[in-house]
Amino acid sequence: MQILSCWGSIAFEKVRHIQETERYTIATLSIITLFVLWVSASKYIRLIIPEDRYPLVFDAQERFPLSLIYKPLNWFKNGPRIIHDAYEKYPGIIYRLPSTDRPSIVLPARFLDEISNLPDSIASNSHATADFFVGAWTTLDTDAFSHTTLETIRTQYISKIGQQVGPASDEADYVFGRYFSSYEDWTPIAPQPKIMRIVTQTIARTIAGTEICRKPEWVESVIGYAQNVFTAAVYLKLVPRVMRPLVAVFTPYIYRIYSYRRKIRKIISPVIEQRLFWRHQQPEFWAARLKSEEMSTVDWLVEYSPPDEAVPEIMAHRLTGVSFGASHTTSNHITNCLFELAADFDRWAPPLREEIDTILGPNMTNVTNADLSKMWKLDSFMKEAQRFHPPAKLSVNRTLLEPYELSSGDHIPKGSHISLAGVPMSMSEQYFADATTFDGFRFERLRRDHGKKYSGLQFTSSYAGSLHFGHGRQMCPGRFMGSLISKLLVIKFLQCYDLKLRAKESRPDNIMFFDMDYPNPDYEVLFRDRKVGISC
Ligand code: HEM
Image (cartoon, rainbow, N blue to C red):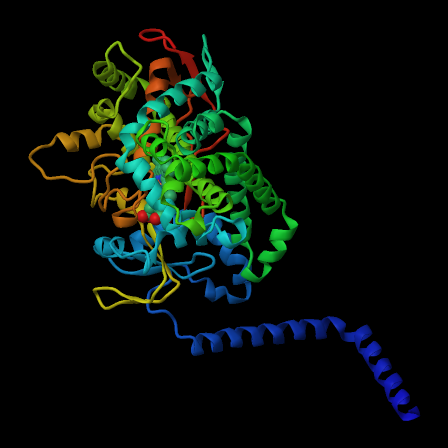
């Protein structure tokens, strides 16, 4: 014992002595040793895990010691630029992007049909969306976009879209007047938050019916849910996967998501119960209701849900998912259209107004689907606005649920995220002449060019030059509804107001991060009552 304590005090003395005299040298040597070990380990890891065969656009592994922090930040900040540069750098070949939490593989256009025709049991859009929004934590999971949800949307918003025009138009008129008043002189207004409310309420009319959509707490909860899912997803994607539980606990967003979900469930549950009752106890009334303009997404969800899914909790979750998919995409699209209009109002507004006036005549109410389908200039303007600023730069996003061998023999591992470079493609001269110039009526001219066979030129249709609603069997099932509401509102703006930007300003830059593209919600456009023509 005595020997041990004697040894201990000698060692302590030595360490103390060393710390006092040479501690800086030892600390430096230790750091260098750790660094060398770390770098060797990373090389060793790369030897035992063979490099993927597709080039990685920005090789963050070269900065291995810092990549855990650097890689997500780099992808967050520079993602949009990296996506454009990569398209230029690797024309026609498969490459990987330094996306944060999954292998992200970008395919050239020749694989478009092959990928977009794969069934969702192999390549799933719902999984890609849930992965992107970190659904395991933010609740925007694959069940929100289940088969039943998608079948419901396809029935209501594709097969029966004609029946949606009346209710959507009524609601848009009703709510528009509450958010946009009369502006006798040029008045600065940030349109995005107001448009978000109008769109959310208009879509809520067809999702949940009149009694729900006019409840301010529904609109607030749906918007609040979506905003917190976005914010939480960004924070969660910026940290390594192992730290996600910490972020989830220490940020307020996840709590808010659950709080908004509770509110949504509380509001919608009695409506779901009532529809379930009608379906089971009053079959004749129910059948007539499904054929009427009163039908809503709740009704079709009740109609299509198998018994084990026909419970308010599951249905409320799916309705929240539909509202999420519909509101931001549509309102951001309308905001982008307004920014383009305001940036060159005298060029775009007169022909658009002329088209609208010719087709609708003096009767500005009771717009029909047939009326809207005749407005080629408006359709073209919307498609061009979307070509410049769709919701995301990558298109036809899928998560592979099985390993897949492309027709070229290239192997894509299970769990990969695959996509096409939608925006770089639609901004390339390969698909459009003078591609980087905003030309509001380019699609109208192309459609009228009878000498050539074009397809995919309408706002809601797609081809390799225009993939912003996706493509193929998993293409956005709500696109006709998104188009309908966008058109109704842009018509309303053109009927009621003149727009312009402040002197010497040009079209404002959008906010871009990861692969996302978002119009600036604070940017103000100048509004003034339309002097000639219809007054609102
Ligand atoms: C201008 C408005 C809209 C835009 C730009 C848009 C865009 C998109 C895109 C790009 C996709 C992914 C498709 C793919 O990668 O192949 C998508 C999917 C989806 N959209 Fe839309 N959308 C819009 C409006 C709507 C509306 C109004 C609804 C609902 C009524 C909706 C519901 C959905 C759903 C449920 C999916 C998921 C499909 C799946 O998982 O298979 N969208 N949308």
